[in-house]
Image (cartoon, one colour):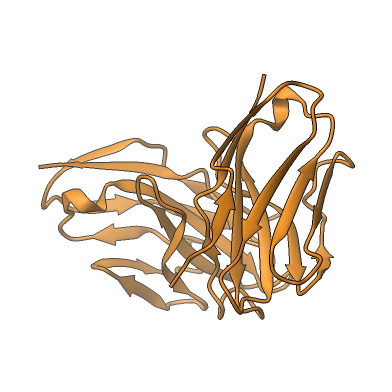
Length: 114
Length: 116
């Protein structure tokens, strides 16, 4: 079945540091890939997405590129801020299966210190 | 505008009791989803409604779990004879419908269920 593997957290960085959160996936067909973020006390919200190979999703300074050859969708940000502290979830939808069912990774807790 | 609202935010119940969890989706959203997030895990799909009907309930773990959406808006997740293993955060999401890569899901803050 489909699965998503994220790097284990927690990740602690200083403000303005470079961020990478690794994500790899296993899926049949051609999945669409997502990063969701959960800020403290809030619900999950979509951060960015990519629907086909070599697409780059970007939002709020975050980027992730859909790499089919390595089955990866790593999240990056050049300079993190304290306000980026949150839990980040990588997820996929398998276009060959149900087009509404998200499969999530376990999440990575990011803490950014001033 | 208002987001997805889930009530209660926290629920503590004794093993064997019945519980109901409520979800108010964003107005106009035809698709509604329930997910369950256990400690240290990502959310796992439970059930998907398109309108009033459950289009896919394949994620419900067993027949103690049931969900309804009688008027195509508010949904209730019902758990009978609760067990300690049911303790988790239950998330509701809604969307405009269609493929989820085109129509993003909007999640509520969840209901944290604790079964003692």
